[in-house]
Amino acid sequence: MTSRALVSALFNIELPIIQAGMVWVSGGKLAAAASEAGALGIIGAGSMQPDLLREHIKKANSLTKKPLAVNIPLLYSKVQEQIDIALAEGIRIFFTSAGSPKTFTKQLKDLGCTVVHVTSSPELAIKCEAAGVDAIVAEGFEAGGHNGRDEITTMVLVPQVVDAVKIPVIAAGGIGDGRGIAAAFALGAQGVQIGSRFAATQESSAHQNFKQAIVNAGPGATMLSMKKAVPVRLLKNKFYEDMTRLEEQGASKEALNELLGKGRARLGMLDGDIDEGELEIGQIAGLIRDVPSVAMLVERLKKEFNQAMSFIPKTL
Image 1: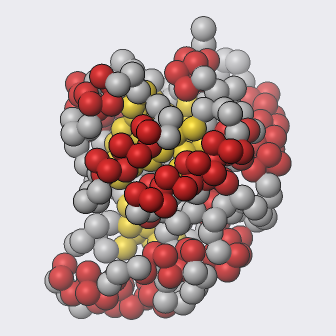
Image 2: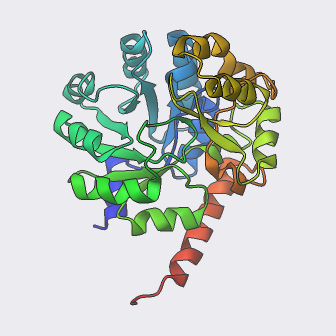
């Protein structure tokens, strides 16, 4: 069995591609479409109250009978309630992030679940393996949303994590086409997690204004912001400029959080306020030029991957 087949077997999916769980973007419709296309669809619970999470899981289950997962960031207060709801609705694959892998892994594993944790460093990857997770997402600093403070890029991070652990490694951060998938496998990854490219699809719950902003983005359109608080990669807009001005003035963490306030990500990504919203997206936005259906995107990824592999020399 090849390494890619191992990841596919772990989740009982056709392709070693995972659609990332993203706040305000990856609801039940997107997750179901990704699973139907042969990938693993993930519902992003980070922006959902427990009852809303239940609705999205039910919706996804009504649209596909294929495996689904839930991503649960561990920094929120209702994590246990979210887990309980996901379990009650039949979810048995959990991607955890933004917290210690020890917190819920044993509980979930004892219930027969598959657990994956997101890491931004080889050191955390080792802790994840020790905690008993089934696989690791090694997410480079190119990724959208909240990132690791070490700012390790995907190309540097993935081989170090592969060398550090024995469990499957899923590469993430800056992967948006078949060439990126081929590169990730060349680095030793056994699967890929793709976020930003799925955010700009027809089934994504992102506002059309946000999708268009992604399509319009150039190569340098994103930047890591709020390093004193919680580092997050954002599309540059008025809110980003206001935040950067505060950071350059040496503002405190409290002042940054005051400007951020509450609901800023929803304002931009779900409600479509492109000026004042927090627009979380990865560097790969500079490569995104359309808003296809998920089925069209996955077929394109497969074709691009096969083309990329045909160009790789067999020997040096």
